[in-house]
Length: 111
Image (tube, rainbow, N blue to C red; front, side, top):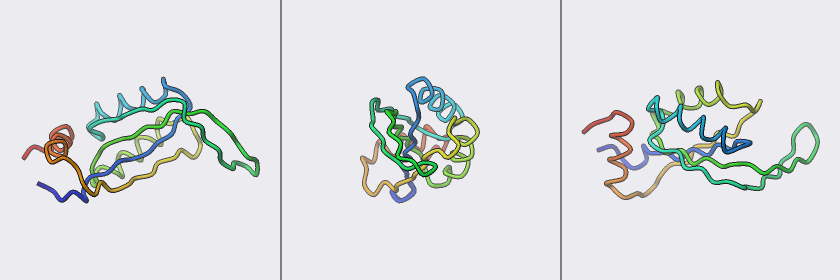
């Protein structure tokens, strides 16, 4: 089995639940993500084009592996409606071993 540091959670924010669900379906069906969890009603404040913006968004938590990050990011850029979407990957430092094996299996990496 790969080291735990090979696993990632990727944060992606989107404007609506429908957008999040569409992105999730694509990423999971193409085996770029094992799972996409979606949280609604996330309040975001950010500067964009020299103005403070406030937006209610959906936050996606995408479980994948390090070796899928480039393809996953490229695919998100193809289908995400924002000009500069949030795509942030964080290493999974610890995790339930059976769940991590399930991620492997879901991404087509049988052991």
